[in-house]
Amino acid sequence: MAISPHREKSSVRKYIFIIIVLLLLGILVWYFIRPAPLAVQLAEVGRGLVEATVSNTRAGTVKACRRAKLAAPVGGLIERMLVKKGQRVKRDQILLELWNEDLRAQERLAQEQLGTAQTQADQACLQAELAEKEAERARQLKESGFISPEGLDQKISAAKVGRAACESARSLIEQSRSRIAVARASLERMVLRAPFNGIVADISGELGEYSTPSPPGIPTLPAIDLIDDSCIFVSAPIDEVDAANVKVGQMARITLDAIKGKSFPGKVKRIAPYVLELEKQARTVEVEVAFIDPPDEENLLVGYSADVEIVHESRPNVLRIPTQTVLEGNRVLLYQDNGVLAEHTVTTGLANWEQTEITSGLKEGDRIVLSLDREGVKAGARVQPEAMNPGK
Image 1 (cartoon, one colour):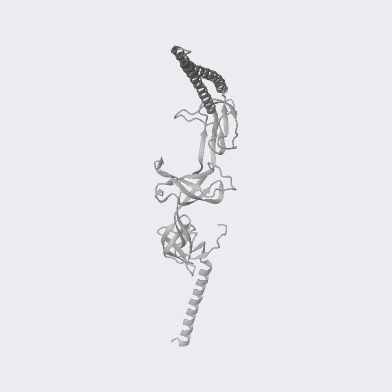
Image 2 (image 1 turned 90 degrees about the vertical axis):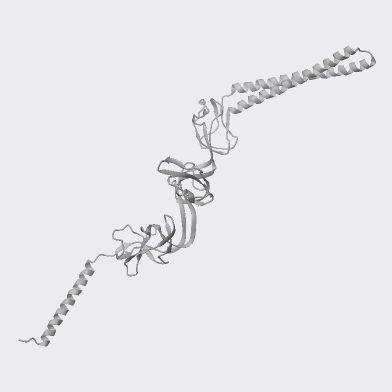
């Protein structure tokens, strides 16, 4: 029995309709069960400043240009302590004084001896002048024949003896003055003075205690620790592999753990001419960075821990991206218009922890993935841009 063409066409249409319905159902099921696009943070390629920097390997320290751990040059009991911790002092101001009554007595004795020597010198010199006058009269009498040559010689000799006695008495005056100078020098050694303007950081001696100067090679606690905080700098260790990039005069940024959220401009003022080998696997070079404009409002204290970032090369207005967006092999994930990520290889230039210069591979305005640490973020993944948190 033959199938009519009309019936055959109806069967074909029926099958096609079923197939279309199945396809639509499949598409509909896929649409509802497909994975949602991954939310990612994007960074836009733009232009700006990129700096090549060197940072310290371990925490640096804020130091004073001048710091003196002071002690009297001789030992003795502390009789007077004239300053307190935290007190500001002027140069040559007396800080403490050791017991020195014996030396003061010696000075008074030398003063009295000086007065006696001056009196004796005046008496001897007056006698010398009288003897010289008598010798002159004897010379006139000798010319008139009223005195013998022997008598004249006696008068002249007496005048010479008197003059010698006068000079000897005057030398005793100088000796007495020298003894006074010695006594005063000894007294000065019992007084500790400030060698510069500064602030008293610490005091280790107390009234009635015996102060002892440090013997050679044996350090002891100083009586007073004096700091000149008008001039401060940061001393920081730089890894030996980075030391060749550091030069005196380069600009730097200083950050302090005690002053959050701020950085202060600085300049490299000294590079140590040797390498420190404190640990066998960590060789460093000590670098000193001076504050260009020290903080005024913040209480900057000597001894604070600090970090320095030294700029050894700078390029303004270059194409740049966040350094964290660069994968191994100089690859980035580029966000395309269809929402799918594509992997691009780029050529980089200067770089630091924050920004990396791009010399080729991207153009201004491109958007690349910033949140690379999220699961599933890779080339070919369908993503959806996520709004950036302004606080980050």
